[in-house]
Image 1 (cartoon, rainbow, N blue to C red):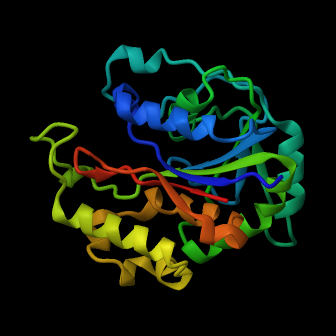
Image 2 (cartoon, one colour):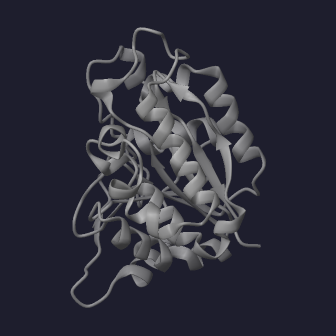
Image 3 (cartoon, rainbow, N blue to C red):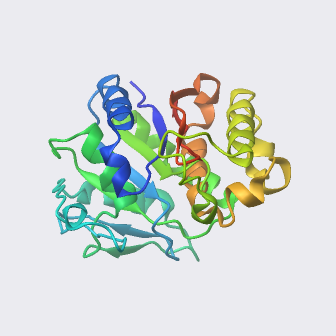
Amino acid sequence: MTTPVLYLSHGAPPLADDRVWTAELAAVSAGLAKPTAILIVSAHWEAAPLTLAATETVPLFYDFWGFPDRYYEVQYAAPGAPSLAAQVLKLLSAPGTPVYDDPSRGLDHGAYVPLKEMYPDADIPVLQVSMPTLDPAKLFEIGRKLAPLRDQGVLIIGSGFTTHNLSAMSMSGGPDGPAPSWSIEFDDWAQRALAAQDLDSLIDFLHKAPAAGIAHPRTEHFAPLFVSLGAAEKSLGSASTVVDGFWYGLSKRSWQIG
């Protein structure tokens, strides 16, 4: 059976304190067959050439600053995924496009924060893959090449945030306060574009989506979606929203495809 593909809005570490979000993520994983392994692409790791991390169990990478100590005490000792890494190496390596290995780099918060809510036992091998570019078309092609892994029970996850502008977050109304118009408009456009399977518009979202430059002043949090879309290209008609709503005005929309 072909494993679905996910795009998750993972949030900052404090989003793990949101009982609604954590329950929604737990429900997503409960609805899936247990994966043989997980391949995750996080908004928080850009490295070129494309690089593989956490091929063995190493300490987490706490890639954030200024939070209370308890966020730096979180543990998620998932098994490494050397066999999956070897398969990814075969799928993505080509003349002129090497793939590197960085076994010392632990999972960053874009990976372990959602996985801890979805698979708290940390008993599934996890491989993190860097984004070698933010070009949507190139990331889509990477996803395409990874698609055969779905037939082996591998869960492919793109982890970002559907809208992400920290300087324009709506802090005054609390986490459940009203979202700004730019976030609502971009979120609605993205949902409709994916429902229509309008890949051309999604790939050209900076020019096609309303308020794209405000919703994503830098695009690294939307970029993982394109790896997910490429991996799920043949299943796009089945895309469904598994998380929606807003957190301090940022869209938490997340999709399952397949």
